[in-house]
Length: 401
Length: 64
Image (cartoon, rainbow over all chains, first blue to last red; front, side):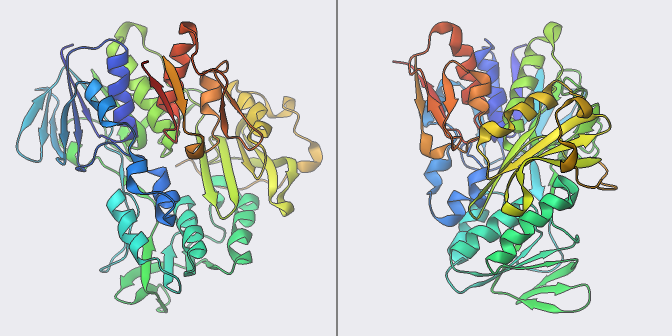
């Protein structure tokens, strides 16, 4: 293999490129990114960057020297426009074409939007800087969507002295992701601070001076942040011959077609640990999957299935939330340490007969380690020391995303 | 090779400890602690893994 192309120059693409070099690949390595910036980190965008604690320079994932050491054919500021699978060629938006022997797709996701003009999204450094400039004390900010991103931004804006309204279509924020009991804890964190969290409301459009709700009400705002989830960047692959369906569909090795792999937010792969296809938009997964895809591409005779225990964290107000596993579509949640009411707890998640997830709020991180282990080994729920008095009622529905 | 840790970037994920238990630990707040600045060769693969998967990009491995 003499020509490898990695499309996507964020965490997953960078991890893939680094892994290829570390594992001894010395051929041409092209890294394509649609943003003009060298690879930078996204989780701080809604946290330290938005709050003004950090300046953009701190987000760089590698130093210029580190990047130079990778000896890349670096194509920044140009998006991939098409894939010709039969010709093994990637077409770029500037009209150039790049041939490959091996290809790794790491094009990530873009924010979903709402009808109407205006409103911020929060995905790129530019997005975050634009919003940060507007979040001055006394500004009225409406955040549409109380998922992790929306909640983090709301918490930062509140701390900056903004008047924050958080609008969520579900009855409880994040119930599908973490269960309604944990969702209630996160709800209280907003309400206790005077953030106007309104659930069960649907926003139909962004207007010049706020957002319009489905019942016709106008919620006025100086600034609007739309945080209603993301869409995988697969449009450019539509005619490429790959299977695309809420992400690039891959097997358990992250392979989408012969010598074509996918990694990071855009990859929908089969995780054998849970027996489910999944697409994970977590920072840690991006790096791990980038590495896994690179290794499998480079060593076809020694491929390993990619079977991680997903991990995510979220900072909201003074709470650190950490979770392992796959919490969606769970059948039961049980508090196994601490108390929900105190906002300090570890909750374990069951799907079928197995322990499939664990989430901690306000606990020392070591408290959750044994649960990570239980998930990694596919431990049976009944054998996993779940105290019987702790079991919350089952959460119906919640099909895996 | 020398390991550098920017502890004020750390988000307490503990991924480094999982990757290289002899080189990293976590304090009670979860913040990464460097146990061995100049790990032996046999630990370097684990450290490289930690560098790559650290969600905060807080770890570097530098030539001396």
